[in-house]
Length: 638
Image (cartoon, rainbow, N blue to C red; front, top):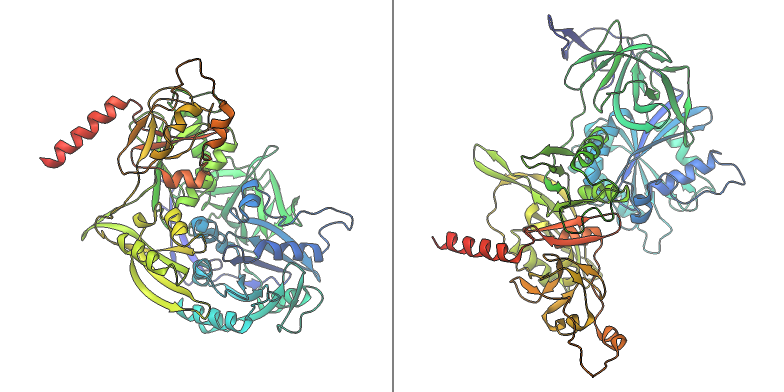
């Protein structure tokens, strides 16, 4: 932790280090002109909206400036999905005190962002919805903050909603603090009530001020200033990486001791312990929504440093003459993996800008530098990589980002990561929180039972909603979303948190429908689809180009069906109206990226290009797939 005294040494004839606790005296003092805080909450509880209000009320924007909503969600994907994916820094000045704000993701799949951000803050604003109270992702981010020793201000947001129950939200949050083992000081939290959209706050639900001044005052008076050693050797733990086309890679972190100056020689200590000399070419702090160049930064500031080309997250920027490393950042290991490979379909190279294995490798390696929860491993096959992450959404965001950048590649269906232990094979288990109307609960409970789910708690709400908690193997959650939404008529909600690795839970039965696969390459004809509508639903439209081995629909049975969707009518003297045939066809199902990943079977790949998403068989040749099926049957009998 920042401020923890330790002694270090360099091993003889080696550029490596180790550290341990000691009682070495260090001059520690509070820096009262700064507050470093993070804003954490469940998805869609109003974090980024609250930051918008704080920025506007501290005159970050000009009076005549047009400002978009959720200004910190600058990423296109964040705006489309309405969630925060990347942690971002900004700062405001209130009554002469600089408040450094970090907006963090609320989804557990991006928990790597939260885990490293809490290393550079001293306090957090925990937002909870006045109607929903603390939600599953609130549990995740709060646990990270409490373990890091942060003090917490609970902000009850959206108290103007018709069904708001702020007292329930506060009491439920206190219970959550106790469940997570908070200290007495942490559990004695301050509560502020807000309407983030209106930019109003108060210390009581009925007495909101006209602005956010009560929130600012609580931050200044309740959250602690950073404890720093201004006269000690330079120490900064890198928690975030940014990139500038002007100065290159930029390392961001909190300076815990000493000072940093532009042009200062430093010692770069990697997370593995290697020491490399370097130099600070540019130095920045965050003010409003921009980086501001500085000549000197004091201990306690969140600083951004340019000039160290190979810096990584978890590295320490230390004093050249007295290099002291800080403990590197540790994040939870990934639980789900997918295979990324070259696109070798007949349509390869038509739509993508970056299509080679070298380009895909370089892109994945660059992602590793800033995405600490990601793992990439090359396989024996050229152009194929195993990419591991914290969940399906974590990997889907990476795939969508690469797709928008012009990359063309193929991905396999997600699979869980097993661990071999002394007691045998272990698999990841998820803690699932469900909200389902009682009319649909029977179907959901049966579905979870088939997927090896174990019920923990179940309560009935006054409105007929069933609130339940289950432990389910991660394997059982892959492909759950669509059947769950179908069973609940689109009204059900579920959230998941990683629970632990437990012994293998046994086989899971999947009553999946198989795919319809194109027999030949060509353009889809309405005539062919008209005669196949009774066989299932289609993913392609008339005149769309397909290739042999491409999945063109979902069969009504559990065995694969090869169909000729390019067949045309023999020419005769009879003339039919083509438009009438097309109009009579049912609309084709078009998948989003998340839905396509969820649909994938084990023997299928998703072809991802900037313009298209196509599902295909790994083996495109129908005859070879038949041989493999027969071989598998004979092996099973033997």
